[in-house]
Length: 242
Image (tube, rainbow, N blue to C red; front, top):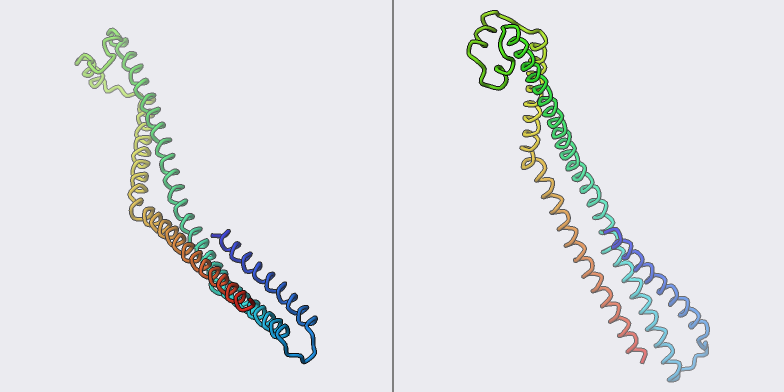
């Protein structure tokens, strides 16, 4: 879009330059034109040439003004609006993805912390149970794994034994699980906003791009008509001169 605007501006300048050069040439031609009031075929033809060239310059100036009015200025306004609108849409889209990335990262950290805390808790539970088995005169291997002797659980519960370290590890694991669950909830909430917040932004960006394509096509077609008309003007003036 920006390069098209520049092309239209340069094309207008080329018409202005050509028109200016033609005006200088006509002015010099007029100065060199015989001033005697002699009416003959040559004088009439030369006057006709000058008149045709004046018309050509006039047509060029009109086309230059039309291109500025109908192409350069509208494209300038459209480009500013498009740039402003798209920048805001892309900013909103980026905010969504930044939020999603942050929530996803937080969830992964919370997940890793939860797994680490659970690993430490299970490891300490195993060490604690093996130590208690030894204290009760049991084989430590017998309390490893999920299938522990029923009397072992009864002995621990009956003694009312509590381990402060294990309570602390359990508390940390509970907090980590809560933070992990919160992380999942926040991430899911952000994902739920995709259809209500992010997708409409994408649709507007797509509509804006489609509009840009249509607007560009329309302006190029208009330019083609102007160029075609300029060609016809040249041809008409050339035929009148001949």
